[in-house]
Image (cartoon, rainbow, N blue to C red; front, side, top):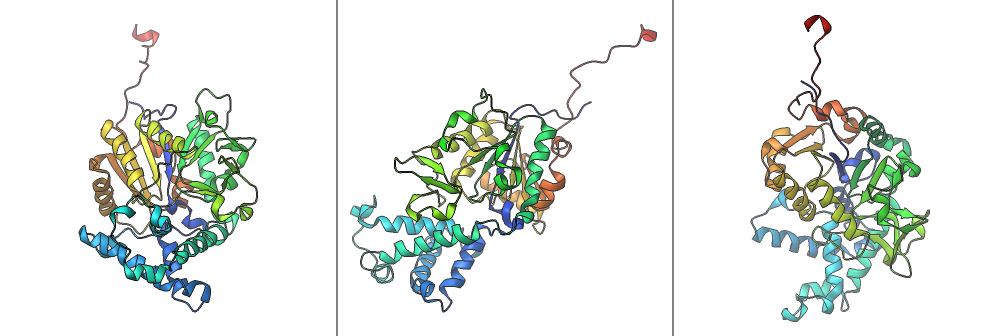
Length: 366
């Protein structure tokens, strides 16, 4: 009997916000808690948004309550908050506006006559996210991301890593020369991810929601800068929200397709590190992959304080998957990337395979 041998593209990694927490970058739940602290403070810049924030938060909890979702089960995080603000900014341009009799009087009161408070609040959130939260506070704290390169060398094939994060942890720690992000001379080129590419870069990084250093140029194309602080708020190439991930422009359309392609095609195991399974679009892709092949596995790496059995049931329910397809490891991203991400560890999740080459009998046995 032999251990599992993984071929090219049979191992796919998906990084969620929890993967960067130990690097000093807050996840989306903690970001919204920070916003709540700011609007409740005496800081005039933020306290002006207090009533607007409370109105939006109450409305989200009310809406989910109508669906039987209450308390801590309500998925309220920074992405959902910014997504609601983005929808409100559309005002009369919103698709549903002709079907709505009038704005709620309280919304009009807290948002301003022209909804100017909505625009300003969203801009301030994006500014603090870019300038403080997503910026890597100390490079050494993110050193565990180097485990991706270590694992790739053991795997011996280019490693496809999909990330839902805006931060630059992978690029900074693994080195930009070892990470393919899809840019040639700062111009987006999807062909750099193609299997037939001559590029031998070990890590193929798909940043599904954009990156803090990406922006739209004057022609509407995505490029990147070495100084993210110079990007104007309206030009930043980031995707927020949980319902509107599938954009019609590249690279976002391509990146979403690639996640579907590689999880649905060759993947034998999808390794999710720090992903909370609260994104319906991503969940739909993972669910389809697990349904299409019942032997396919998903390894979910969660925090060390999580109950493995509870998390297994929660994730299985979220993805409508068989519980034996879901494996939960409660150790945190740092421990996993530093020590637990090995071919041997992943092999143990599959039944032993028969040796493909039979041993020949020795001359004394002939």
